[in-house]
Length: 526
Image (cartoon, rainbow, N blue to C red):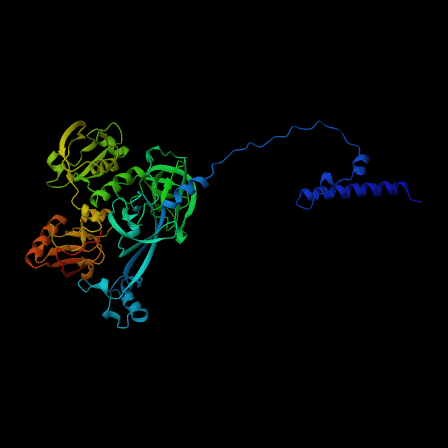
């Protein structure tokens, strides 16, 4: 006969084991759910009846879906394949051209004759010898039924051939209508034989931080890829040029998204995806898009003229910080402080001086150098307006006639230094100051005309001229700026049957390049 005390100890032990099981379940082991008890067990236990607690329903927030939007817009988004010829002997070596490491690399891993081929020197026709073709992928979108396509300039810059793949799989050759390196925009055209679906450019001024946006493009060759996010900020300056005014977005964009559209929820294009900030090269949620209002202005000019006409003032400016504002007796740290005025420029003729702080151009307030750059650029050549500036604590108003920015031929795909209506070399020129602001490292005191672009398959490309070469003399005549270089080239082409000798600086070394321009009846790309 069992001992009652043993029975009580056994019951207590069983209760402890059951409690331990429940506690173990709470700690991550398999719990015994309450509903697993049998009806008999439930009836045999003494329970305290409590009123049922009201169920708390989680609020249902309906997030917008993007399927209908994407279905509407994706037929007008295209993939762009740009083919470019590069110099194998100039790009394969990771060391500075002509250095001891470069010569050793080429001797053992490249050219068989070592120093005999250190890369194409000026005048050797490097674009035609030892080159190889590479393909770059980007995105774009159709903006009218006739087949005009917007993309980034850097997608097609230097391309010898451009192909567009439509959403339905068709591949069409594309022609470059015009390019604008200053805003990194380009306009292409395809002939599809029938009207194409197209997208409307919206009003980017209505985009607010926090608004939903959708990007469609071709990242890493994966065409038709859709990503979504929000507008993170407006008016970003990423130091890519004087007209920076980017939308910052967190919708993932990667390599290959360049030139693709950024959509608002109404299906209008409010930006062109252009750049990302990333230490790894992939998306980390910081992307930048060119606002559609700027795109609209540039595309209209590219469509009409093949290039962008911009106003020119001739003054270098810098921001005004709080310390500078106190030193110049300014009410607030705003405006564009004039650091330098070019001789015989519209600014010089208007009487603008270094130390003046420009606060308005016409009726447009100027709060920063970027404001002034954009306001001047949007002013037509020959327009008369008024510069308002602070000088020695007083406000002055200076009448000014805006000129045209002279090196805007760099914006066109087919423009180049040439005679009026005559043969063209196929180069676009910029000033030394412009090139240095764009990041080109030139020795202090360098004078001449910097080659900002070389048209593929042009006379300049065949002669081996490259972007970044500095033209210091034409024939035996020294040139100090693009205007002087263009004039001297025109004169030389007229008198020498289309041949011209250019003295250039490349990688710190001087050399002469002979260029034979084609006849005036030759074809011109773009």
